[in-house]
Length: 54
Length: 253
Image 1 (cartoon, each protein chain N blue to C red):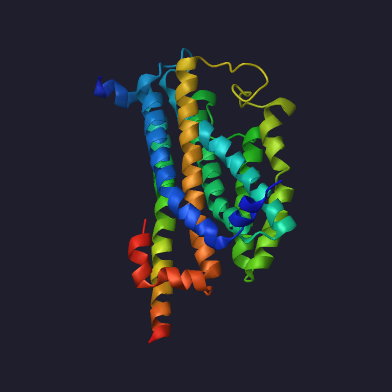
Image 2: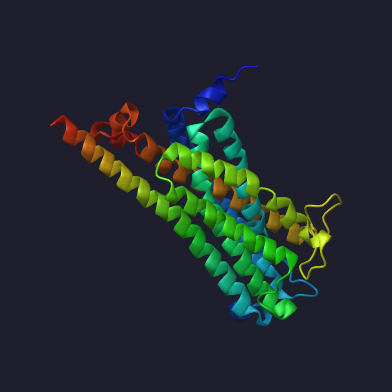
């Protein structure tokens, strides 16, 4: 594959690549945010639970 | 008819355990399908005879647009379950879907305008398809604002359910806008009562990418619903038992 012509996208690089980049950024962010939120929630619940027992 | 499975799904505890088991598989599936679909679309599919390489935006634009409409219909269906059966799990799923729907709508609008500039000569026109899709974005944002404005969870769920059911009227308007009004946006090529007017070398990567978006939606909606269920059930026995350190290490996914 010829990288240069692939990256140039037939002159439409300024439209094709930002589209794909934005989609990937938004999809990854949407997957990472709930992952972190659930971990934080779990830690909070665990802290409270063990705290109650003492 | 045996409805035990339905009652089981309605139990937050059972649903949480099921979601915990399903998400890694769905996540893996969506990764594989998206990687395959986007590679196929960007590298393997032939250029368009008229639009050249610019048409490759279709492999992210069309799945985003489909999912933006599917997500609202999913929320309306959950809303029905909330209003009829007061199903807490359905309210969690409905709330979980809203930010995803807003993201898909945002992506459909932005990738569409990045495609519109080289092909139509304008990033934005006040055309029926584009305007009704923009209204969908505002509906999602309104739904999310409504959820954060009402403190009481059950009341927020019911108010959201009503909004989801009323807002579903916008979905056929978006879909048929290209037929009902004179628009710049092209008509349906795949979701019509005729065979799709698209060569198979382009149609297949589009369908794989769309399947990837759907699997991604399922993964993330379950993940978000898990958080919502934990928040709502934090005081109940099963969550506290599950969260104790002895239990967490072997149940961590």
